[in-house]
Image 1 (cartoon, rainbow, N blue to C red):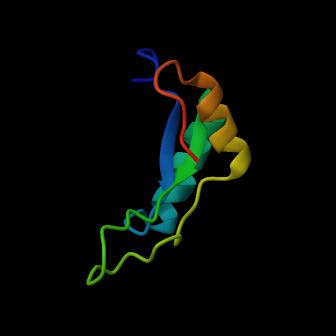
Image 2: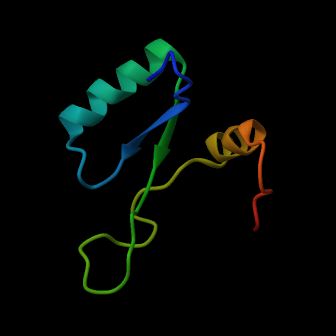
Length: 74
């Protein structure tokens, strides 16, 4: 997938245990991939908390720079 243009990995998510996060961080570092996080919040009644895992502003800016479609709405 990296050869096909993969730009990043969602590493910080409650379903990724620390062992998996460690592996993915090393993979991202080795290949220069962006590292993102997500709360994956879909409403009340779910275990995920809004803002539980975030993407840094610096990585978000790099994602925006790579975009070539609809502008980001803030």
